[in-house]
Length: 205
Image (cartoon, rainbow, N blue to C red; front, side, top):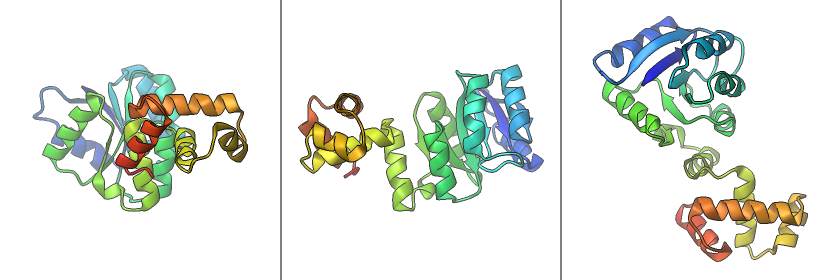
């Protein structure tokens, strides 16, 4: 796994490099100190994974993330932060981050989490889930449910029909039907009753 570390503090980049130095399947191929530099280096290096600081001198991680993804669509982008900033983290998750890790992880923890992310698992450090809003976002993130899909399932759980959900959310009936169908697929449900039950089991409701 080839990693690009994006952080404006050189000690962080050096620290990650040291933590994975003895790991044969993970290599830090470069570093960047700003979002713009990260976009350029991502395009040039084509890393498998980008560790992206939540707050950079020129923009937030949530702003940089889609631009980095556009530069290397196959790369997984993981927020790597020292801040327990729920609003910024939620924005990064909405922007498509593949994970959120705290910078004080040990070498064993970091390697294990990077391998899990590389294998396609979406990982959020448990310490970043303390507020109810971030906890809900973390659960939606793990299931790949969008906020709209969640809202449709939540309203379906109250007994509302598709036309009633469409009116409440300002959507067309066909759009509500589509959101419900995609939510059922992601929840592994065959119908709306099963979707509601699975959402309850996942503690979304």
